Structure formats: C-alpha cells, structure tokens
Image (cartoon, rainbow, N blue to C red; front, side, top):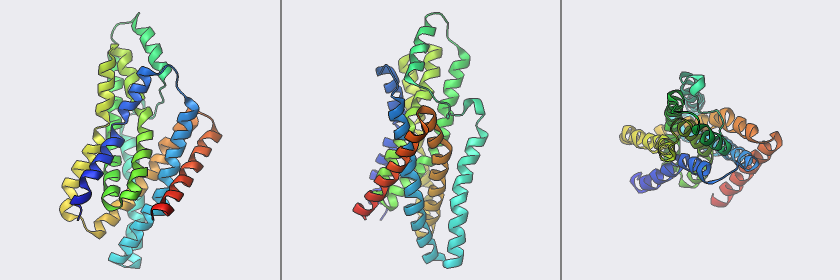
Length: 274
C-alpha cells in the first residue's frame, strides 16, 4: 500500500532539500536581495507549516491514535509525540555551536563584498571552516525535515505538496548562508554552490533512512506517532527559524501578512482538496 507513493514522496523530499542550491544561484546571478519578497515568503512558509500542522496533521494523528489505542491513551500519545517532535529539533539546535548555527542571515550583497575582499586577501581557512560547518549544521537540521515531508507524502499527498513548498522556501536563505563564507574563503563559486547543494541532500537522505528503518513496522499507530512528531517539528521550525528570519529580512508587518497569507492559502487548499 505504501510502495505506490514512495517515488512521489521521495521526489517531493528531494525537491525541498535541493532548494538550498537555489539560494546559491540567487546569490551568484542576482545583484540585489529582494528582502521584502523574502520576508513575505518566509512568513508565508511559516503560515503554511503552522496551519497544516495544527489543523490537519495533528488532528489526523490524534484521530488515528485514538482509534487504535483508545481515547485516553491515544490522546496522551498524541501529546507526547507532538512535544517530542519539538524536543528533538530543539535538541539538534542546542548541540550545534551558536557561531555555526545556520540561522545567521546572509544576502546576495554579502557575496559581492566577498568578491571584493578576495582581491586583497588570501584563502581564509576560518571562513572555509565556517561555511563547511554551516553546511553540516543545515544538513543536520534538514534530516528530520526530510523524514517529515516523506512521511506526510506517504500518508496524504495532498498535504505533502504545500509542506514541501514551504520547506523549500525556507531552505533558500540557508543555501546563501552556506555559500557566502565558502566563497569568501576560496573565491570559487563552483565550490560554494557544491557545498550548498550537498547540504540539502540530507533531506532526501532522512527520507531514505527513515523509510528503511520504519517500513517493516509501518501501521496506523506508527503513522499516528510520526504525524504528531512531524507536527511538533514543523511548528518549532516555524517559530524558531522562519518567523524570526522573516522579520530580520523585512518588516514586522510584512512577516505577519505573509504568515496570514500562508494560513489562508493552506486553509483554502485543504477545503478544495478535501
């Protein structure tokens, strides 16, 4: 029953993960960062992820677990799994050193400054390390996101598509964050793009590993737990990464307008596709 959707689920996850490479391409082929558009887009992604997590995914998880385990036990397992997802992503965030955390914002203009600096400075090993560690940190962050997208696509493709798009948008500035310090250190656009591109591969990798580990045990109870975990992970990412980044790139109200727009589009989509 699951094999029919596996290829589709993997394709969505691959699309979401490799959008880190889009961040690098934007940096190399555009001259100015459209911060207002990026702010609205990140707020939009947060709105999509928060709405679909709380209204659709968590509700499906609870209904499934209550049907399988009973009202009391199912309810408690839902709650524990939801906050467990938050704990997992928060723990990943905690173990990554602050200076190498991928949440620092970079813009296209930073690449231009890097190009000017390269004319007067030799290769900076410290910056190279920063870029590589940023790529590694983003890879670690993307691993559970990959599993989340993949699991959603296996269970309900109609909600997986907007999730994948939201995660893809949120991965674009992360791609810039990887490529800027690497290009600054080496002056090599190809190397900067490659590391940025590879950091996104952990998303489909998370999908593959998760599927290989879980596919023998997949049943309604396991799917219910995974869905509640996914909801917790996506709400945490939205509140901890997307909304703060949206506000830093633009204005507070642009972030909120994007958030509301994302929720509205997701709500209408669920009604139309339901």
